[in-house]
Image (cartoon, rainbow, N blue to C red):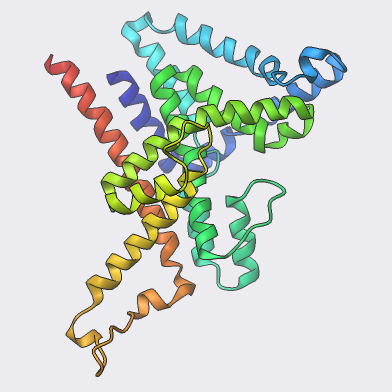
Length: 309
């Protein structure tokens, strides 16, 4: 557990301190080439064209990582395994920096450039939207796909789990999806849904603890989070509700005697009225970071408890 925490912290630090390295390393064109090669060789093979044909694409790279993970667990008192875990988690994280993508949207000074920047938060083929609620949803979905999904499966299964999540996500939304047979692509969506569901549930719990618990609980229930369907769509509703609650709290904090007109009605402060500043995005990223720090704090508590016991 302590090695997992160290690997997570090191990979996160490297991702922010060595962004040029991350951009040069995190390329997955090889996976698209591999799927295209399989499609050429297997052709009309029933297993490849079937619902779980994606397993044939995932199995070789995951098997290689699993073998390395097992072989490097013990040598050098686990140091080799730790370095391997850092490398795989660093590679699977992202691949784009969420902070930079959100900053690009906020700093854009005209609708055209803002729309271009917002496209980085949407899957290929999906038109971007500048509607604040849609941007908030995109931030939380991207946090799930870029950060929390990789992190949870790394915590559970090590490097194997981190790469499993990343390659499955690429098979659904990335370049590789174009070369998968339709039925195999549907199977990849089902697999990703199964991987995403516990991630979304734990993200919701973290948002409830770092934000407004009642608001998050209500949005989670209304969004279908209480059902056992492998659908993490409720996370978008939870994210929007959390940001609305944050903005309402900020407005209440600004409210004072000087903020009220002669009839006693509250005047919304300029920081909330000025939508060009996109306070929704600022609060969404704040909630995402607080949730990530909570995850790491809980992981650290498990490590400390292990040492104490």
